[in-house]
Amino acid sequence: MTTAQVRLAFALLVIVAVAAAVAPAVAPYAPDAVDLMNRRAGPSGLHWLGTDDLGRDLLSRIVFGARVSLAVGVVAGALSALFGTAVGLVAGYAGRWTDDVLMRCTDAMLAVPRLPLLMIASVVLSPTVPALVVLVGAVGWMETARVVRAEALTLKSRDWVSGAKALGGSPWRVAARHVLPSATSVIAAATTLAVARGILLESTLSFFGVGVQPPRASWGNMLYQGQATLATEPWLAVFPGLAILVTVYCLNVLGDALVAAPAAGRGWNRRP
Figure 1 (cartoon, rainbow, N blue to C red):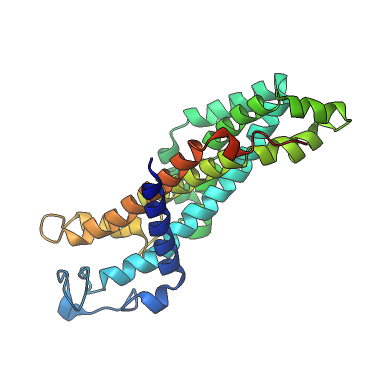
Figure 2: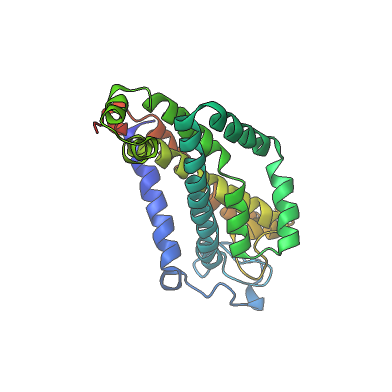
């Protein structure tokens, strides 16, 4: 992964995030503004990305849909990273039976098909945005837990951790004050990938009709609405799909860059 690719990915993510944050200022139309005289219009100077079956401006809906998709991805990713970090740190640092119990629970969660479970739970709980955040976060912590556990296992065997123990530091104080800060780059990488998974899961649930419900725009339900007319009005599906693709790809690029960071950059040489 080259530096130029990482910088480009970061710049694109910043653009998407800023556009979502100031959506009313940058969107040319209201996301639900209906113009029946311009139904299914192709990209033009009036509507840069075309319009949907109700004449709503596609660019405006993509910008406002970014608010929903990014919010679900970021908040759910943060929740899953927080819980996964706690599980992985305890499992890796405590070891023995604690590690066995926590990792078997993690393996059990990984064995459950994630998408069918989310679809059933979303239907039962009603597909609101807060419910999606909780559900996506609840099924996304396992990968983070495994990564943090592996890092904790590596760090706890280092000399400076042994030194902190010899100076009288309690196990949990050493874990919180020395092991955890030294694993921040790994946690950041796992969080970045968790956000990407959250966006994909929200988009998939919305595509299948059990996520964000119309008329509220999200990239997933826009993709669903456009797939029926893909042969005649491809822009209705292509542009929301590109928004998902570019955002998730950029997040994965940043995650890969953090994973590939040199050991010195991860703080492995940190001293207590």
